[in-house]
Length: 64
Image (tube, rainbow, N blue to C red; front, side):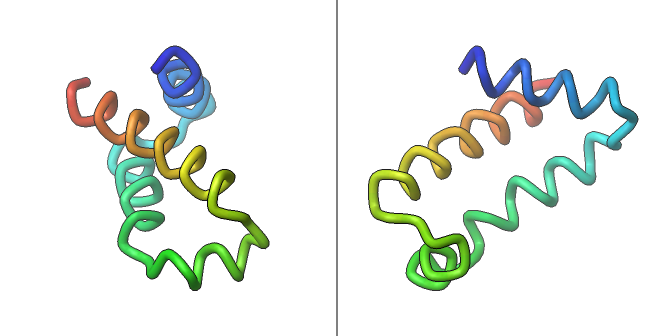
């Protein structure tokens, strides 16, 4: 969760609106897993790691 918080604060400091971050983070989970894995050239472990990171970022943004 620490890395997700740091990433969120970095983006907010750069001037990215909270709602835009929520849309961006949420869009990842709305796409088909196999399609994302193919587009980003990810294996299963890398996908899970990215998904967990973005989930933590989304939860943190929701609680701000």
